[in-house]
Image (cartoon, rainbow, N blue to C red):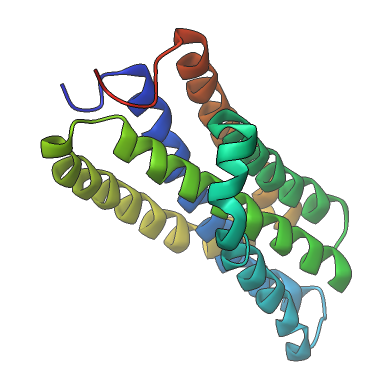
Length: 189
């Protein structure tokens, strides 16, 4: 049955939550930077974010092979959480850059790891439907996160917006931990 095994119940939230957290914070970051009186020249924070999102792809597969899938997934979660902590503690331009770099790398590890795990969690004939369903869920929830970022930033503030990602990351960690504890293999039987 689709999305009923411990591995798929770890893969889906990791993939989806990684995307939701990334879009939620990334969408609000330029608005928060302007509100903190940083000039538009502060756009280099988005450049650092993009480097964090895509540069790790060159080594993510090797990191998974060397350290294992759980380590890469947990590292992605920790880095995404570090983004929230750095952003909540400081509104300086370097803090924005560091936070968004951490967010990008965290997203990459959660996305690559979650996608790999999702594909490995189902039989070949199920993979297209599972991937399509996962992408639909991720797209829908990231759209909601993107639309909610501005109003939440306006209502709660930058620090609180960043702290709001912690429960989501904890949920991803709990689901990943459940899979690891189950001892399930990465390939279906």
